[in-house]
Amino acid sequence: MMVEHEVREAMAAAVEHVRPVPDPLGRLLTRRRRMRRFGWTGAAAAVVAALVALGSGAVTSTANRPEAPSTRADWVRQLMLSPPRGNLVTDEAFMTELRAATGPSPQVLLADEAGDQQVAVVSTMGQLRFYAGPRGGTVAELTAEPSEVGEPFQQPFLTASIQGVRIGIAPSGCEVATAALPSATDWVPAGSYVVRPAPAPAEWWRVTCEGEVRYEAPAGGGEQVGSDGPPPSAPGADSDATTLAAETYRTCASHLGDRLAANLTVVWTGELRGERSVMLGASAVGGGWWVCLGRMVESSVSTNPFHTMSDPFLGDPVTAARDTDGTVIVVAPKKATQARILLDDDRLVEGPLQDGAGLFTTNLAEGDVPRARVEALDDTGAVIANGPLDDGPPRRDAVDLWGN
Amino acid sequence: MTTDFADFVRLRYAELLRSAYLLTGSSHAAEDLLQTALLRAMGRWSQVEEPLPYVRRTMVNLHVSVWRRYGAREVLHAVLPERGVGDGAHQVEQRHVIVDALRELPPRTRAVVVLRYWDDLSEAETAAALNCSIGTVKSQASRGLARLRLVLGERMATS
Image (cartoon, rainbow over the protein chains, first blue to last red):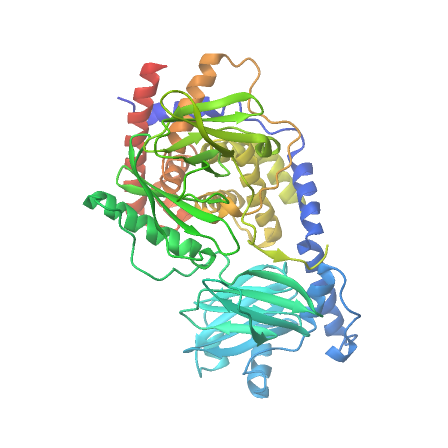
């Protein structure tokens, strides 16, 4: 019987070989510099510079706005120099009190009412503070609760969820549009910002500046809304399978909600590695499919989402979707009994399929992934289907074209 | 960047990398996870009162989040530290047994097991790191251990 100390010893043995490569700090700083190319550090500096300029009176109004932005940092600066948005900004007493309560050097980006709440977004020296309070309440009520403190400015299109109220604020001069699921292609203009009270609709947001689309993505980011519809059920499934499917559906719908173009339905049920499993799938906004694997591990449900460009409901050619931890889910024609993963002509892993599905583990380097393929074989050993191991990320996961 | 942060990275990187390895099951993913957590901490270093718990908490929460799977994947490697010097085939096999067994646990259960039995956090500290109740930590730890006992027992018997 293995006891706790044996687990500890096993872990110690497992990590014995894990040693940092030389100069971890240097690599970390290199990574940060690369991130700067995508703007956040530079953008944060621009915000601070803009606030200093505002504080010193060097910049006093949007009439003094710099020329059209050409870099991400410039776009962030333009957002910072934009006038406050929201229906509370015309209340001068409210705004004066809000600035006094949220200093030093507060820059109010949004003060608005939505549903039964009022929300405010204020930047103080490059750090964002989000406030939410009851609609019609005083500034003291709005700022009484500890505010959520956000990261330094990263995005020229500021998106956040403040106690269920979803907001998006674009630099002035840009236009925000929204498009409802399932197609997310019918764009409705919303002005230069958007505020959605809970329950927020499942939709995508787009920002166009000077005729160019700079941003397009699901509105919810990591805080998705669930898709409508009842949990799917597999024909002939027993109660455990139904419970597993329902739990997998609930988890996946809540995380993938506004990336799904259709309701999740059952692709496959059975056992993987001795665990009762279910695979749900739905077409993805922008192309491809999301596949959600739910496995009953002990009495918990483990859920993993995968994206693939191959239709999992066809199973032919083989659908393989890869998770970043090396796990690969394979869906092949039902008569396939084995699958193997190949890198060039080398066989990396081979294993059985049950009713055409299986789960594999690989340790491929990222650079090798595009060359890897999956083959499905029947019981005579003949290859009856094949396909790429990983056909890339979702085609429409995000448009982010604010410059370097 | 403050000197404190640089010191923290130098002193704690190896320790945190091992925790990240147990959480993720691969050196590649561990490095990515740890670097992401450190960069987050770096951005608010002056507000971080207890750096080690903060970075650990950030790592486990990043790991548990399914969205991490679709987040930034960039990671910089000078050398992939997958194989240690003098590793024999048997050691490699034993290592894979525990890593594979951990990988088969649900992410949250895996995080509880790593925090409790590798990082030696108390139940209360683990609950705080994962923002859950002590009861949840107890039940997840119990399930995780039971699962590890089962899987490790079977695999070690056949390896």
